[in-house]
Amino acid sequence: LVRPDSLGALQSIGRDLWVESNASLVDFSGIGGVSLGNTLWVYQNPSLTSLDGLEGLTEVPHHLVLYELPALADLGGLEGVTSVGGDFRICACDALGDLTGLDALESVGESFEIGYQVSWSYGNGNATLTSLDGLAALRRVGDALVIYDHPLLANIDALNGLEVVGGSLYV
Image (tube, rainbow, N blue to C red; front, side, top):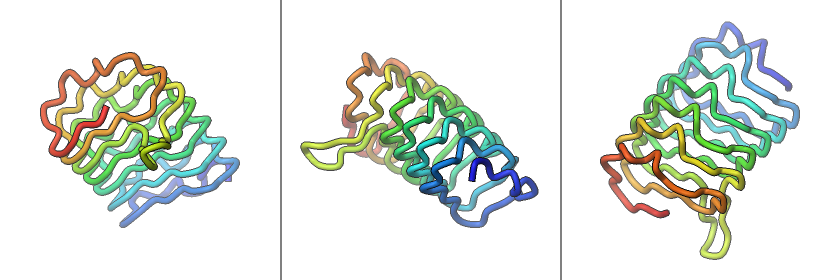
């Protein structure tokens, strides 16, 4: 599967959209203005360079997971997402330089993990992340905010509008 073009008429998914282990998938072109009832899980898609095609999303009611996407260079396609109701994880997306594309994101209902601590000695960060630009609208994280394992990240200035972290803050 290179693109899900044949799903162009799809308007709504009542529960989850799981896109996992598609070696040839490059983007989501053709999905159009789909809405989700629950979770967006995008995992182990090594050729995925773009989230284009997801522009119609304005919220993800439960979890949003972007994990092991080594070619994903930006988060364009998520520009309309203002809230994630559950956890939001961005891990092992080693081509990401910043978080531009999340510019409308105001709240995450549970944990927001930018990088993930698998154990005390091992983590899965985003190797080329140099900036959190794209998070200027973020005001609230309901539980933990985790920024873990980003050797090139120089500052967290983009979080200057953050008002509430309901749980722990890990930087």
